[in-house]
Length: 101
Image (cartoon, rainbow, N blue to C red):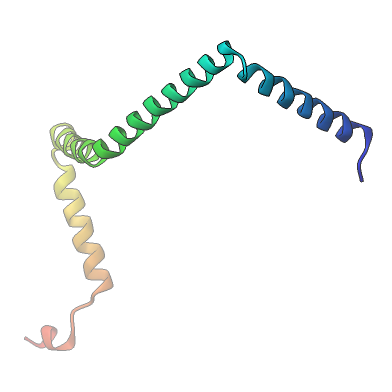
């Protein structure tokens, strides 16, 4: 169901589209469009560089986090290793042959 609010929104949108089209036909509009294309290209290049650097960044982050953890909580590594060993033992109980030996 189309009401007056929808019709007004459509008319305003169409008017804005026509105004933008006329503006882009001017010299100033063409310059603005070229600037916009240039900035879009720059953003694309920056995004591609960020994607290329992401694995290196996360590896560095992992290394620095491990170093900080070891420096600030020296017992954390032993605690986590013990925790993982207990969890592994709980999920993999010894077989009957291992208990007989």
